[in-house]
Image (cartoon, rainbow, N blue to C red; front, side, top):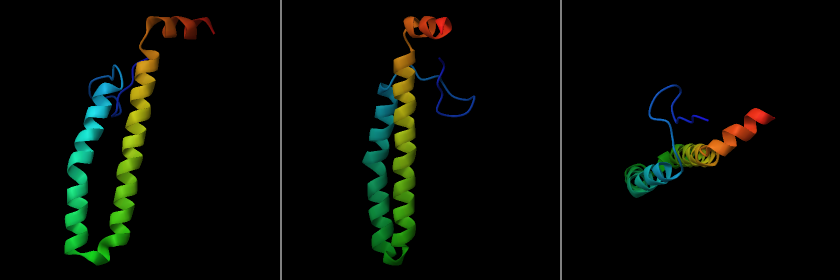
Length: 84
């Protein structure tokens, strides 16, 4: 099964490792931006909270896609799916 993070674009995922690397990159970068935003404008907390939730939802979706790509990568999976 071919899994992509973007509809009909990008390189197909082959497993979870690239997804974990991308998520780690976001986790290394985004919290500092969120903190600066909150410090500069404390009244933006409600919007910031929505943005944080949205970011983690996106990362969860990407993780699930990586898991699916890894689980369906073996040829045996495709053969079993065709038999059913």
